[in-house]
Length: 294
Image 1 (cartoon, rainbow, N blue to C red):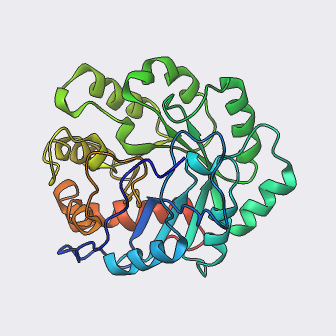
Image 2 (cartoon, rainbow, N blue to C red):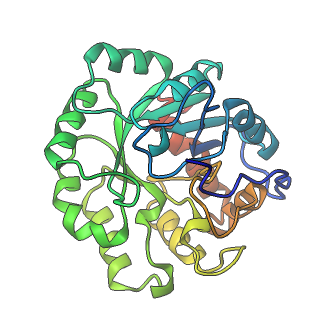
C-alpha cells in the first residue's frame, strides 16, 4: 500500500497565541520510519513517515513543552515506534498504547517503564475490525492495576450503543475528539446534548477538544467547531485536554497548519485560567501525576 493521505504541513506557522509554560500536546502520533518500524499488515490506511524527530521539532516550534503520543491503528499492536519515541524524549513524552487480550504482564510493565500511561480502544469501523466488548473489559481491568487510564475513540452515532459499556469502565476514561459530533447539527442537537448528559453522569470521563480539522464542514479557521469545544471547556474545565493530532493521519480534504491549530485554543478557552487547566493542569494530572501541582 502506498501513502493514502496528505503529508503533514511542511512549514507550519509560528502561533500568535503564546501557550502557558509547561503546555502539553495531549494527542499526537509517530509513524515509522517504515524501514525501521513497519506498518501493520492489517492496517486500513498507510501513512507517510512521521518520525519522533519531526514531532519533537514541531513541539518546540509551537512553544509546547510535552507530548502525549497515541498509538494509531496503522501500527496495530506493535508499539515499538511509540516506545522508541518515549525513551528518546528525556521524560517529556508519555504514551497511550494499543494492546490485545493476550498481552503478557511483563509487556505491560515494559510499556509502563517506557512511559506508557494508558491504552486506547478504537471503535471506528472504518479503521479497525470488530472486537468483542468483553475483550476490552478484560484489558481495562488489567491495566487499572498499573494506574493507567483508558482512551476511547468512537463516532457520535455509536454513543447510544456503547454508553452502558463505557459507563462501567473502571478509572479515568478519555474520549477522543469530542466524541466526533456532527457540527452541522449545532450544539443544541439531540445528539450532542446526549453526549453532554453522558459526561455529566460520569465524572470519570474526560474529553479531548481536539481535531477541528476533522469535524469541520467548512474551511479553516473552523468556526463551526468553536461552539462545541467551548461548551465542553466551560462546562468541564477540569476534564478537558487538547492536542494537535499531528501528523493528522488519514486526512484527505486538507492538511491543517499546526500553528493555526494552536491559535484555535483561545477561541475555545477564553481565559488564562481555562487555558492553564486545558493545557497544563489536566494533562499533567493524568500523565505526570508525580509532578502535577509543582
